[in-house]
Figure (cartoon, rainbow, N blue to C red):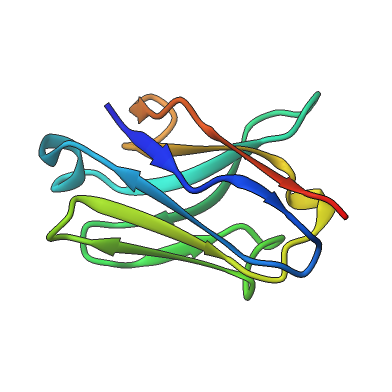
Length: 112
């Protein structure tokens, strides 16, 4: 139900913007967010945004990543700046927490 886009290959220090379109039933009532999972590691929270626009970030991305939402488009974004190789992972869009709704993921690779 959630569809991500915008992943790809970028050099260290570069930027990418991820997008996630959610159905109205999820977008309008659920906290939305981004998680990521690197090879051999557990899925971890990256950032969340509430219906009212309050945001929360993992310490590892705070100051580099920005989550936002466009209510007219039922879309959330993750602007990722100053990317590091450690940011390499599959990024998943989520609605409603770990027991909620998930996208299929989009690969982000940070490498020179």
